[in-house]
Length: 148
Image 1 (cartoon, rainbow, N blue to C red):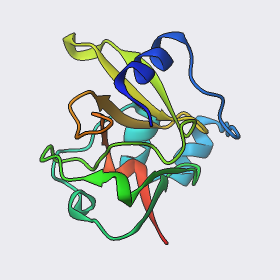
Image 2 (cartoon, rainbow, N blue to C red):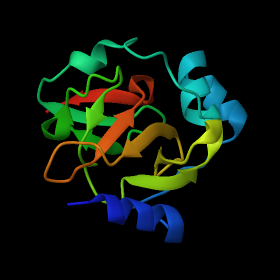
Image 3 (cartoon, rainbow, N blue to C red):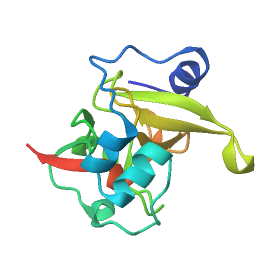
Image 4 (cartoon, helix red, strand yellow):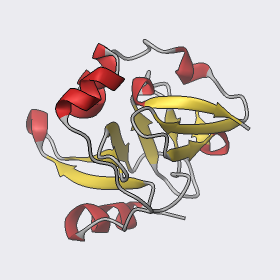
């Protein structure tokens, strides 16, 4: 189980090795993704809070990267954070998500990206529920639900 110190270590010292990597040109990403998906995942944008039904979606299943289909999160780790974005306590696998120090907007945060294709997902914070204490605050548009 990942904890906040693990996340900080990845962000500062290097991320876990992904199972695979996918690289595409900007033109290929634009052709594949909707305008909003491209803005969030490739340009590090953020969707409006409470703009997705996915926040209140708690059926069993998994969540994959909208860009490359890598499984990122499991519904068993999803919880209602009240923030307006889907929230999870852990990634599906330790090497599914990569972490980057983010010093934008006058604050320091830890950005989460798909470790396979480098798609911006959101951020992770140390204010989640026990036992991990992590809250992965993820843009719903960067995910797609996969049924079990």
